[in-house]
Amino acid sequence: MSDDSFISIQNLSKHFGDVRAVDDVSFDIRRGEFFALLGPSGCGKTTLLRMLAGFEIPTKGEMFIDGQPISNIQPHERPVNMVFQSYAIFPHLNVRENISFGLRKDKLSKAEMNRMVDEVLEMIALPGYGERGADELSGGQRQRIALARALIKKPKVLLLDEPLGALDKKLREQMQLELRDLQREVGITFVFVTHDQEEALTMSDRIAVMSAGKALEIDEPAGLYERPKTPFCADFLGTMNFFKGRISAIGGGQATIETEDMGRLISKGPNMDFQSGDDVIVAIRPENVEIFIDKPVNASAVLGRVRASAFLGDRAHVYVNVEGRADPVLSAMQNLGGAASRMGRGDHDIWLSWAEESAVLLPPT
Image (cartoon, rainbow, N blue to C red; front, side, top):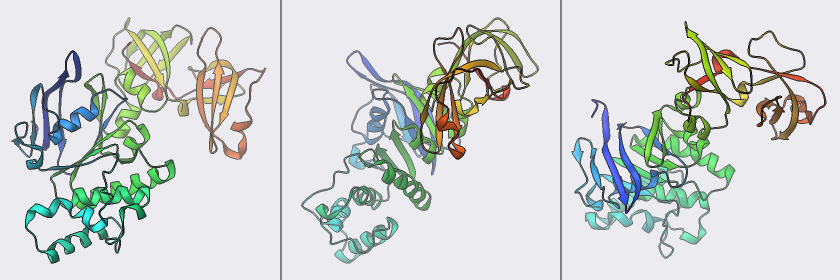
C-alpha cells in the first residue's frame, strides 16, 4: 500500500465456478481521485466494483478503504454508496422522499432532513424540485436524483456502475462534464465503471484498463492513449493501425523495424525497452497518419491508393490500400472545407506519412 493510497486492492480474485471474473488484481486509488475501471463486457470491472460495495465476497485477497480492511464489513456499514445504471428511483416517492430515503434510520429531525435535501438539490442544480414526482423527471434529472441520494449520506467513496449508459449521446456528454464538476466540488473519491473509452478519457484522473479479469494497464488518460504498453490497450482506447515486424537496429532513442507488409519503418516513440532481433508491433494512431499527393521528405513515407472514405462531419476516415498488405491503413483527417469528405476511391497514387515519434513499439500478441 503506497503512502498516498486511499483505496487499496490487494491480490483480489473472484471466481464463479471455473470462471475467474477477477483474477489476482492489485492497485491503489488516491484520495479524492476520479478513477475509472474500463473494459469490454465480461472483463471483471463490475464484479470488482460490487466487491468494493460488499455485494460480492472475494474468493481471495483484501480491499482497504482509508487503511481499514472491508471484506468482512456488511455492505450497509461500509463508507461507500453506489449509483446504478438503472438509477433505482422509487416511482411512488417524490424527489425529496427519494433523496432522503437513506437518512430514515439516522434519527434526524424533519427540519434537518429537509435542509440536507435542499443542500444536495442545490448541488445537483435542481433547486425547487423536491416535491416533484418521479414520473415528472427526465432521464438526466433521474440521474441527478440518484447521485443526490448517494451523496447525501456523505460516503468516503462513491461507486458508479455505468450511470450514464441509459442517456442519449448529447445528454451523456453534458452529464459527463457535470459529473466531473460535481466530483471536484464534493472532493469524494469516485470509482467509475464504463465500457465507453471516450467517457473514461473525458472524466478520469486515472484509468485501469481491464481484460479477462486482470488490470492490464493503469495510467492517466493521456498516458494510456499516447503511450500504451500492450496491443489490447492500444486497440481498445480509440483506433490504431498495427504493423508487425522485427527490430533490425535500436539505440539512441530510435529503432529500425523491418515490417511484414510496410517495408522499413522508423520509431522514435516510447517503449524502447526492446533489443535488436525482437519481434514487435508498430502502432500508429490514425490522426497521426497524413496523406500527401507528392512524396514527403520522410523515411516513413509509404505509397498507397485510397480505398474508401467515411464522412463523419468535422472529420473523415480515409482507408488506404498498400500493396502487399491485406488491411487498409486508416487516416483520420480534419474535414476542413469538406476536402477530406470528397476523397473517395481513387485511381491515383498517394503517400502516407507520420512523425516517427508517433510510432509506438509494442510486444507481439
